[in-house]
Length: 134
Image (cartoon, rainbow, N blue to C red; front, side, top):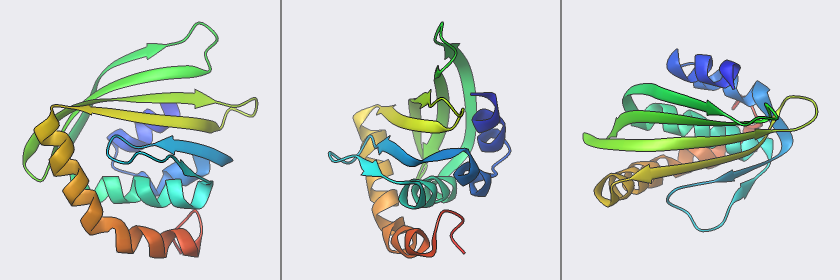
């Protein structure tokens, strides 16, 4: 999804909330249970923006139906090199309905889990404030 990719590459994580469906489902690489709903997913994505450094997409694959994308990325979490993939599905309106993130290696997933855990009080407060965090 080009709009998502452009916003992330520009570091404009605040704009991602506008791309999410109200009933979006986010599957985290470090949490078992999916997160559901625009406000919490937008807040998590803003938290990711505070955690990742030197983020870059290195490859993009698109489903034949043009409603699914796989964006391969490289970044750092707490100084640990991380490789990952964003799996994105959109609904009939073109909004993101599913976002699944996978990362490797285990040391990077652990660093990401710790960094995101430190962000979670702010993420929860932003989610209560709504999709824009205001």
